[in-house]
Amino acid sequence: MIKGWTAVYLREMIILKRRLAKLIPAWSVSPLLYLVAFGYAVGRHVNVGGHSYMEFLLPGLAAMASMTQAFAIAGEINIARFYWHIFDEFQAAPISNLAYVLGEVLAGMTRALLAGCVVLLLGALFGVVLSYNPLFWAAFLLNSFVFASLAVGLAMHVKSHADQTLLNNFIITPMAFLGGTFFPLSQLPAWGQRLLEALPLTHAAKAIRAAAFVEPAHMTDYLLLAIVGCVCFVFAIVSVNKAKS
Amino acid sequence: MIEVQNLSKTFGDRAALAGVSFTVGPGTIYGYLGPNGAGKTTTIRILTGLTRRDGGTVLLNGYDIEREPITCKAQFGLVPQHTNLDAELTVEENLLIHGLLHHMAKADIERRTGELLDYVEMSDRRKVLVKTLSGGMKRRLLIGRALMHTPSILFLDEPTVGLDAAIRRRIWGLVRKIQSDGTTIFLTTHYIEEAEFLADRVAFLDAGKIVAEDTPVNLMADIGEWAVDFLDDNRLQTAYFHSRDEAREYVTGRMDGCTVRRVNLEDAFISMTGRKIV
Image (cartoon, rainbow over all chains, first blue to last red; front, side, top):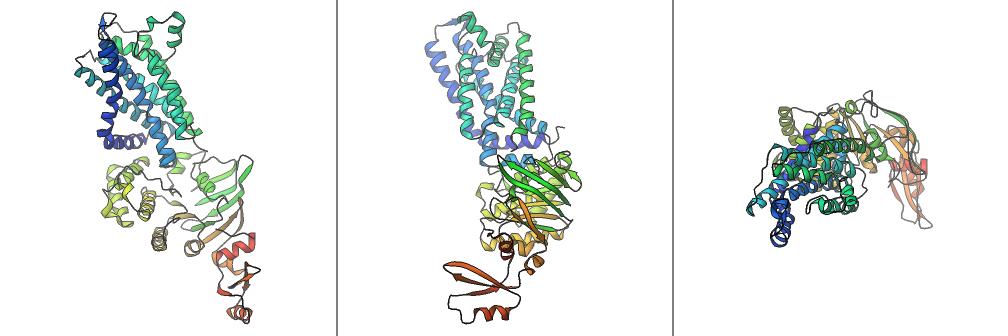
């Protein structure tokens, strides 16, 4: 069933390795700006739940990186589909939709993991080192699983590279700012909190932050991310058929 | 072996294929000729599982592409009309990924890569990024990649489109070499000389239907052996003759710059459809 996923994954990894020297600085720009502008300048004297704002911000930025970089696999897939026509090579090969999706999702998660490490290293440069324990990485990887699966599924539905930009504008950017990255949801009115609880990133940010602060974990956050991830993964598998004209 | 029965496909309200049937025997080169938009690429995309059919049956070595896609896809190699090599990968990395997609063992991939790069005369380009290759080299690599898993059927969709005459002939030689290894080849083209040189049998496709199918010699025999092209009221017309003498006699005394030549497959196509292939 999953035979052939290594080919899809290896292809993405070769390209990633070849571009890594450019990608690492690119992955650093946004987190660096947020750390400087919000963490260092604006939030210097702000305390959130007993932690400095910089400490509060860093796990949020890690969650955001895991989302944005996992979702970025959609862009790679669309370049392969619309520009290089490589999707046809995968579709003409004796592999299942499951194998294809697994390879792409794992590639998205690997990309997210590397970008997350860049964020944590930047945090360390600002003197913020939290606990990066197994629960931290579990939440991080579950979040990247959700968004890589969603990305693969949506990439099968878009008709052009321009459509992909729209998805980023309507899904990723709002979630990045509203998913508990920059501010605690408790600051919002009850209806706002309930609304934002519907976003997977909110649960990821909560779980990653709690793990980083070595606070008690809410297993419901992990469970929810796992369920949403599985739903998105199935959506991606079904969507591969959609990409066939 | 390729067996296609009553294949149909509609895009919106336009019938791209309307009941196409043909059989390609083992080791045959089957030329699938038609003008742009006739349905050649749609046929190949359906036969290779890239596009869903609306009706009909497709069997490759006895396997149905929609019912047993994975077994069926192991039977063939595909050289698409548009180059779909991975430009950011090297020549050998492209072959490696293809080998892994076809579940080949690492040792087999290594051995086959060496063999194929020799076969397509690109051994010296093994470590080179694909984006630096010329158009002719990319085409040869596409053919080599399609042969990586030693398929018994090879689909060639306009394999020489956009290439100069010398490279086109080099690729024809390669296709003949592949056939001599026992591979069944399904070739779409709108180059008349390509079909005449390569194909054992030819089907004429026009507006989604096969209008004739036979050997190139038989298809041309019905209209004669010699053709005279002449201008009539500023329109190019062609008259057909069974002997060169008849053609010469027709030309004698005409003042309008006639050309005497041998009949080709395009003449056969025009005589059946009233339309040119290109």
